[in-house]
Length: 405
Image (cartoon, rainbow, N blue to C red):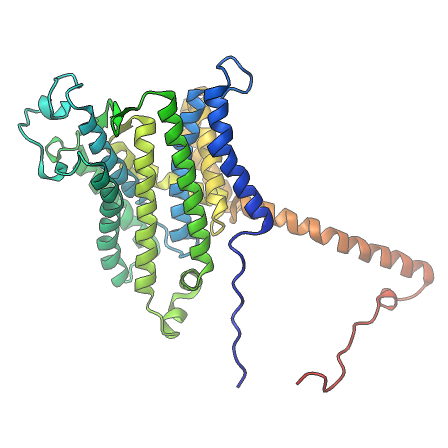
């Protein structure tokens, strides 16, 4: 009986991949701070505070797109509710930032302004640890992860999949949005949280703090990218892709898909929660609108445009779509939604593998072009000599019989 040899695990990144990674790392950690802080505002190479905030926000979106690729591109589970996990991480950070305001609010009270306005006397129970930065960091991971675990356990155990799973996740997000809109829940109602002033006692409205958050977001995105690359290249990642391609065969092979799907679902939710926590101090506001169904659908569009099951594709898609959004919503605001819908339809019909898939297809054609050129030369030579083209092709080396054991 012959022994099955599994393919050897390759490097985390290729040589060109590591070069690109370190170039991006230098741009995020060194070049961008220099262009923003050192280069004077009038300089041609100056990076404005607006550009810093915009790129920082898009990097947060890119983390969500990367999380979507793990669950959709590599596991085959389309979620239309990841905006919920993004918003939950943002609310955890927003609660801490509201407590950091202290008595600098309009009402000069230890309570947040919206609670004073609603005549609240004490903080609700779920604000108990909101004044601790360490506890906030734990909650940013724990709250989205716990909700994702509970929802995913019952959904995956019931074997809900396909369009039914997508509809349920969207319904879950919509229900949470309605809950957060209510004033009595203690999350600021439809206004949410805003007017942040400090983080760790350091003012937010400074150039240095904005750049610090920018660099931290970039490092988080790069770290999650490497983590995702390692995860997909592991045995765990191979099982996820097998579940995506043929879940029934995975079950017949002795694997229980529940644990694998639930684990990647929770990891994806936590990544979105971290992205939301980084998003709030840079944008300066968080409200239930972040849980809207449209926001969750946009996350899926970023992954589809860039290219599913590529990791780098969703990141590229997030930058392209949100870059176009920032321009179109200013120049042609009434056409933005039409553009977004047309883009998603065009990608679905003509670019099923996204932009990265199209680039790979072009690269394959370029590599195949020299071989085709050599065959054309052989045909021309054969026509001149009046022989068959196969006669000009050197014979293949034939292994002697009995040479292989």
